[in-house]
Image 1 (spheres, rainbow, N blue to C red):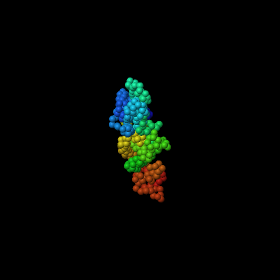
Image 2: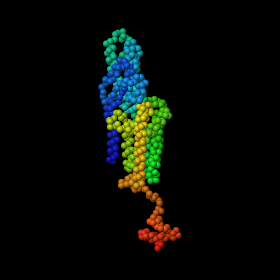
Image 3: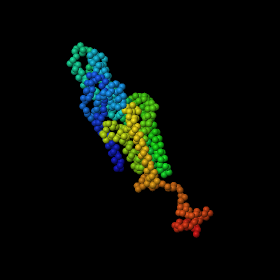
Image 4: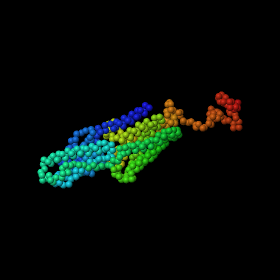
Length: 457
């Protein structure tokens, strides 16, 4: 009961702590400003954005001068950025022409807002999706007021009749462009809860192996047990990760090329998602199996819960919006697997080398741990330190070592002649008589007499 209470408080503290004052960490998200206009209007917009007072609840705005084209901005937003505000080229020229001659002008062509939906659904939902349009709207209003004041003080009657009124009153608008589609309804919980369901399906048969592997430790070589467990866990991970990939395919529906739910589903992308799920489950399953081998049955749920809950939580929050304590979430399999899966689905934030390196490293560590756990367990079985259920000698649940015991149905040792043989008789009974050879053990002689057996002197 005490352990369950501690675990409950740990889980609740971990969850609520990760979401505590989430908006106060918005300043950790950087939004790039790209000025392709290089005219007075573009520079005025840049100055207005950079002049916004810094606040913990707002992203950090920074000017990026390395990008010179719209395609470069798209590629940068897809791979690296939380968001990019692009001031489109020829903005100053188009606006001046509309004010002077009344030429057609589209305010929405002034700025392009680029969002990468696949990097973090939580950060996009609670910060990016609201902060960028609010900022642009505020800057556009300020510029419109200033432009109208300057226009009234400088323009004459003849020029006023030629002015494009829309360009005068609404000079700055914007268009939102997604550079990685991951905006379906369950996007914040799709991957973490999906991987949790897959892992639970792997966990149950893996745990059952603990209660059926006792005879194997008595009769099988250690390396064979080790390889057998790897094969079983690998097969389970491949099977249920395949189900997970098929579930996503089914969720996406018959229109597999529907862009708002991710990139088109091809054979290669489906296989990549399947292998991504399998690589995410493998270190978790190996780790849990290594721990449960040496843990008594009464406590096998503890490592499973303490491993599964933080991993699931790491995929449901944006670590950039969490306190610094949660930086260790970066090393959890579900977090790295989630980053890799979102890249496969949306094309955003490609961290393939980082994700695969961490996952393979965790698999190698878990394999080493499993090798040591099976070696120790076999030693404990042969020395009688654990019973067939995994209870340790000296505990109330210990039922005794089963090593070397004959089945209960074998009653051959109840026959007197075989008990005498076990004590060191020099010859066997005569098959034609009920006599037995004499021995020095008086207790056995008395037992023979009680059974009306003749003692040969």
